[in-house]
Image: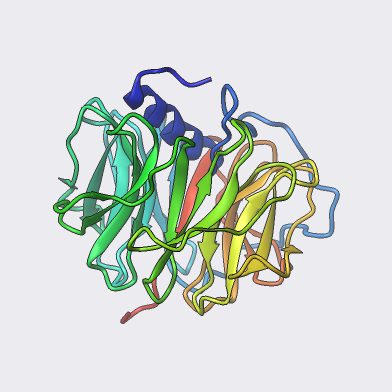
Length: 318
């Protein structure tokens, strides 16, 4: 379980998310080092992934966790080069910047860099920990998780790191914020049971809290579809972690994957036709693409080290 020291809890969460693309509130990270093979219908297609846009992700292929970029033509390159761990990249709406979590200064803080990896700048600098950044659709604010008040909660700050305000106030830990496309609501995970998470939605003013999932097991890592009609999420309600979608009001839950391996960390393409995810179906964590209906699984990364934290870029010219 987590250390009682606040920053250690965020550090553990960031490392879990970096390894598995999700977070599991048990000791260690479920899925890390899992050896699993796929016997389902979602077989990876041959050749390079048919990306509709750029994708940021993290990888341990060079020894420690760093942020990488894969272009639409499949070309991959490293964006960060630091002895510390860099994780959880999230794009600005215009595609010009990437915010990410890093412990390069000792504690997990949030940094922003140019989309080519240049000019990394600290947005937070606290003895507590911050992670799970998510940019607002208009680019003016960033939501994130922090435990500066003793418990992981959702916070919102201006894109330059100023004006930090606390959004959630609950004894249970909150994680993984994601903005609705209209910028009025934030979906997130809440761990009410101590080991099982559920998806909630709250207004950006902290009002109108709604619980969307109540199924046995953990429902987590919510990701709004670009048109705001669906929320993709990860759940182990059927055993292993799979990807699901539901209507924005929590109804009409549909399983997108049913693989015996873990499939986590959904990220939508800007046109809503694809989802990036992390899967252990090849033995270690790799980034895949699937169609929005769960078909046409395509492997994107092929490294020996674990890959995770996929983040699809906004459409060009956004």
